[in-house]
Image (cartoon, rainbow, N blue to C red; front, side, top):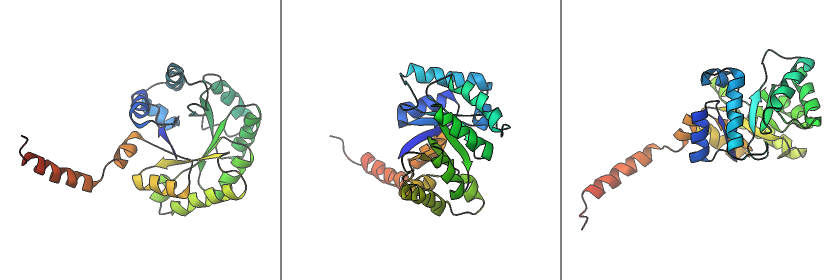
Length: 228
């Protein structure tokens, strides 16, 4: 399973790549806002970093960049998607799961511009992006679980449907809006291709209270053992 970083902050991207070995980046309008930069400056900085790393295309290191979320008509989505795609060969165009977005994704994929259908909240929403040939589909986890829904089965259903009809690994499933290490594990068990979350969630996945307890025990033993 691949790990993507859900962020548009360059310091987080650099840290996660260097020390966690992340395989890609996902951004959205909220991440861009939190970067403190104008939209174009934020994505150009990421593009420059991917170039400096020697990445030649989305195959090396995909970066999902979301279009203006106010755009729902296919004819309005296409010009912005094409413009963004020209900034970096690593960029994958992130489009909301609405009918106009699906139409645009199918056209863009035929043009060789890779897409990520996002804001998916049901298995039904996940099927058509695969039929359209999208590179990624992004079912959201955290928001659903916050409202009491069982996301373990929801992700498993998408994986099973993709396996049944030959979409698995062709359209990769990005479990998005991950909030906890357990959600990462649930998605891994289900056979999800990718998880994307913030740097703090990945750091939390390294922690365990028994590790802290064990360190305390071993440190006490270390301090009470002769060194010579």
